Amino acid sequence: MHRTAARKGLLRPLPPMDLPFLVLVLTLVAFGLVMLCSASSAVALYRRQDAFAYVRPQLLYAAMGLAAMWMASRVDYHIYHKLAWPLLALSLVLLTAVLFMPEYNGCKRWLVLPGLGTLQPSEIAKFAVVLVFAHIIALNHDRMGSFAVGVVPFALVLGVVAVLMLLEPHLSGTVLILSIGAVLMFVGGTGLRWFMLAGAGGAAAIGTAIVLMPELVPYAADRLNSWLDPFADPLGDGHQTIQSLYAIGSGGAAGLGLGNSRQKHLFVPEPQNDFIFSILCEELGFLGACAVILLFSALLWRGITLAAHAPDRFGALLVVGFVVQVALQAVLNIAVVTNTIPNTGISLPFFSSGGTSLMMLLGEMGIVLSVSRGES
Image 1 (cartoon, rainbow, N blue to C red):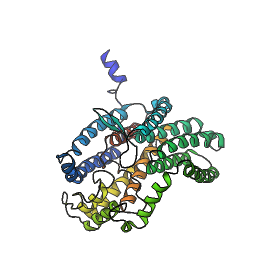
Image 2: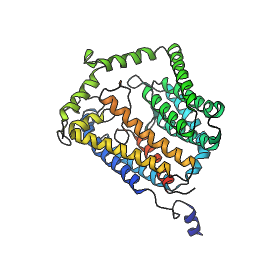
Image 3: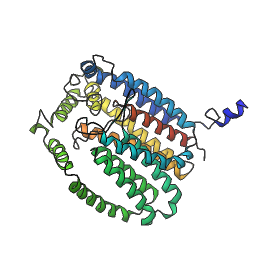
Image 4: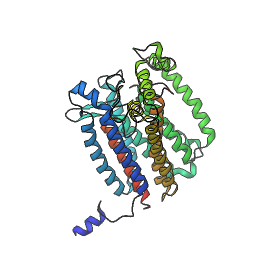
């Protein structure tokens, strides 16, 4: 009896998961933990009198995330058909609840859980949007060319999520979720003509947001001005960008060596989070930065390869959604750190401090590995 239960549960024999994808994920996690330990040591010592104050909980989250990844890799991914809408509903409730939380750095992005830390609802929203979009497309792929099926349900979901995230405000998260949704719609078969309509609708939505939420205008204007000329306000809005560029420039080709960053000593704000890539560039140089970019590129390439060989459309869409999310988030973070785009406050996947993000990411990677087993 016990043997029968085991064969039907998490311990049942399964086809092997994709080893290259697993190795890439584990490499990124290990690399991220090493860099977080180095980048966060000074600010952790200053703020909490403990050099390991940021990396210690991250190690715990990584362990729990890896356990979640292993379990997710063994669960039949088709169960997410049933969980898609409930998880979206939960994410909307949490995105609403976070608006009543205290501000941190001018934003309301975290729910405070007494005794447990904080929870970032936007991470759950990303996950839920991928599930819901994959669910809708898989069930209606033959009708994706029509407006009623190929546009309306997706526009409604993205519209509600975007409005709630703009109220935080969380511009980078909004851009990321809208981009993930657009990619899934395109891959799923939404007609190209509807994307042109969506562009016009997006412009109208931005105009509406400006009218209904005028506080977003100075917020966005300040970010734009500090991007165009960060040295115009070197001690204010431009400070973070300037210190980041100093860190990147001083790294040179090979870097100053792991642990030898000077900018992490309270010059670069939040070196353990959004700007960890600048510390990586300073310590490991151009070569280290290229290594990170290659790892993310390889993860995307392997994920798309797995999607192309997925057993069904639902599995393929899940893989595309999750690997595109990681790749887009990495691109946006690196672009912000190098001042290629305005500072939008977005973390670097697997590297930045943040338990919710890391655990959700690893859970998503577990679903990709589940799809890679080839069970339909």
